[in-house]
Image (cartoon, rainbow, N blue to C red; front, side, top):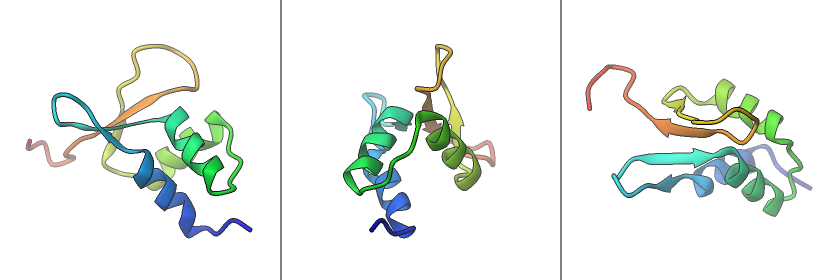
Length: 79
């Protein structure tokens, strides 16, 4: 039986570091990690969860669709 706290665990496990050292997460990676923990989320539901439960990730997707890419940013404007 899936547990609510596992969603955040899946999110953290799906976060990657790119070549420039920035932390990113793709919706597809998040859904794969959720699936591994017995959570069945669609890409749309995963995007909604990211938008509602994180405040320091912004959408940096370069194409349309539900498989989106998010990146950590500093809401205070400092790098």
